[in-house]
Length: 356
Ligand code: ATP
Ligand code: MG
Image (cartoon, rainbow, N blue to C red; front, side, top):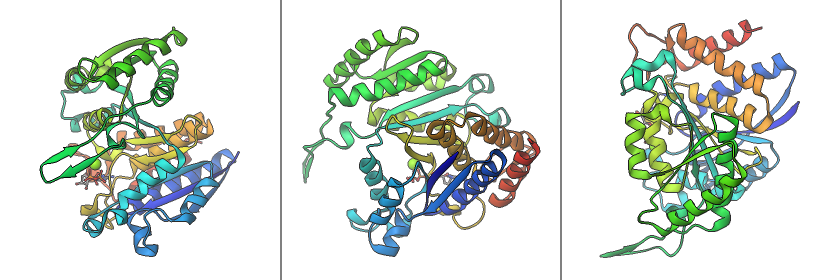
């Protein structure tokens, strides 16, 4: 297959981890006779430095002309004092908005070689295999009106029926392709937007008789993520609840440096990126864990290009390097051998070669 991928390295460790993922993609292309046309563009702080715009027109146009986007990370202390239109994060919000990427998808799965790094007991952490589907473009973070004065502040939580319907459909379809269990998370005992959310989930479930649905309140979900995370298959929720719950879920597996994510619009096209940020404290030191970005590339192959075999080959290579006892510095595991970003990536590339 021939695919065009726009790579947005971004800031901090972004360039280091995307470089690793690009090497993996090039290896996959060679092995499976695909042509991946990789084109690079600026976003975030790097783009602000180059042209005073966190999302330059040229970046938008390259992304528009591609089949998927791979992003590293944006942001860093260098731009923290900038006025709000010149903040790196603006680039990320703008690209999601431009392409209508309303579904943020985060798989969280226990990695046997890393169970010691989990803050949870091994017997609780080892069963974790869930995906959080977070609505990304509506709700409290975007709705108007908003206002702040010296002693008064207002935010608004708005959801429209089509916004809820499309994210709920995404989650039902995902649940159907997995273990068939969907937890819809809301605060329907207090919020009207949650009552509408719950009604729509009830309507939608008629179309997915093979999926078992449970409505859960966000507060009790936060508890259950710690006490019984293995019980979840797919979780679907609105923007702010999803923001909080997905960060909570991300620590369960032991490292932020391992988790991929996708922001999509229901047709496969999307932005694939590690869950972690730009990690300015270790940027430029060849220390970052590239696994989350490599696994995001795998997710891209699976979701955007339907390349299941290729995606699985990447995942297998990553887990096998960990099983062999090779780690990056962020993974606190006894008896570990700590490698640099580039050396650890080479292990993954060797492993991919040996799979043939
Ligand atoms: P953001 O606001 O962009 O989400 P953040 O402040 O939440 O960023 P991160 O940039 O994700 O934080 O970093 C949090 C901590 O985790 C830092 O100490 C960082 O060094 C570490 N970290 C994050 N990603 C990685 C990685 N890929 N490899 C190693 N360490 C990482
Ligand atoms: Mg963060």
